[in-house]
Image (cartoon, rainbow, N blue to C red; front, side):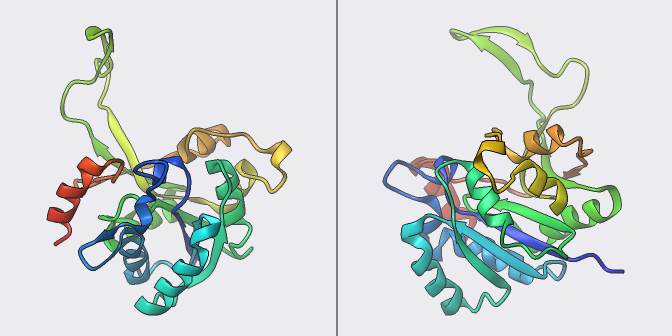
Length: 227
């Protein structure tokens, strides 16, 4: 039987802001908000059956307008997130249908995501139980203190930067991010959460551009790449 996969697009939290006043997902790049690029990629991916978008309370109405304007018909729910990533994940997962087997999680601050990369993480999850987009780090990676190198990190193997999208079993995500706050741990990221749940993490190597808009300085290359 064909697995059911939904997307969970995160557009809230500190990592989704350029500053305390500016939310990355709602900046206009070319002719549309940053969030719209990610939603378009999930719309174009044939493996994705539905999408849940997690946003701040004050942005929920504008996202509804965006969904209607661009015809993002796969969006099933626009959810108000919490102050921390774990709370936002729990809120979003609560609105993913029970029959969904895998959830593809993506950060809206990475607008260059493609439908093809989403599909590759989904295929990996269906075969191996998870699929995490990753970029190999070709240059040496070191630990330093006060500008002085203390150690080199890649002596015994290749190093990878884990990015999104990341596809995991819905059941494991729900276990990691339960509804009840007192039972919820504030993981640094979803990879840490899934490792804690003993989910074997499978990397999906990609050479695709993985630019994340974290600061005003990232806007110029983003504009150039997204034309």
